[in-house]
Structures are given as structure tokens and as C-alpha cells.
Length: 161
Image 1 (cartoon, rainbow, N blue to C red):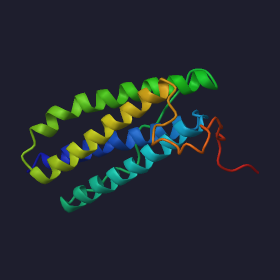
Image 2: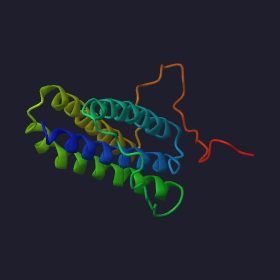
Image 3: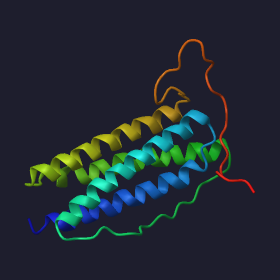
């Protein structure tokens, strides 16, 4: 039990870094459907962080409030989008590869189950990134037959003064 809190804190820190990097990446994804997928991923990661924060708090800890969020993006437009999608796909797999053995060796079944869910959702994110790289626009589901595929672009900034 004494190793549980540091493990959850480390996991939280890495997941927070991923969220911040995904937020930065979304600014470089103009394609409407792929950008919506990033928004979905960020929302799910916020939920995952809330689960982790609650578990850390129950064990007497406090989740970190800041993480390394530096992200440099190569290129602009489609080249930047491709760059962040490729990097995020690799990062998702590396995160799962790094954490799966530690999660599977946990003796606390409740927290092990929570981390397994997060790892599974991270693999789902990886699949989204790979599908976006392949040019798929049906990442979050298919449109009805009466609607045209979306070819729109989103703004890189939410507010324009």
C-alpha cells in the first residue's frame, strides 16, 4: 500500500502532461472532424484526471497542478497536423507500454481496474490518431446518408477580438 500513492501520483503527472500536449496539438488540427476528436479525447482525459485526483486524495496525497507541457510543432497547416498526429500516436503507445507492466503488478484491484480503463482509452486515442493520419473523417461515428462529409476547418483560436 505504501507504493500505491507514488504510483498514482506518477501516473497522474504523465496523464496531465498528455492532456496539455493534446490541448496544444488541437490548435494545429484544422480539419473539423479530427479537431472534434481531439476535443473528445481532452474531455475524456479530464474525466480520467478527476478519477486519479480523487484516488490520490483518498490516500492523503494531492495531485500536481503543473506538468511539462512544452510542445514544438514542425511545419504549418497540414504538415503540422500530420506531425502532431504522428507524435501523439507514438506517445500513446509508449505510455501504455511503459505503464501496463506496473499496472498489472498492482495488488489494489480497485485502482488497478481504474488504470486499466485509462490505458484502454489511451489505446483508443492512439487508434483515433492513426485514423486521422489515414484521412478518415468518421472518427467519432458516421454521418447520416442525408449529410455531406465535413470538409470544414476550425479556427486555431476560440476568440477573435
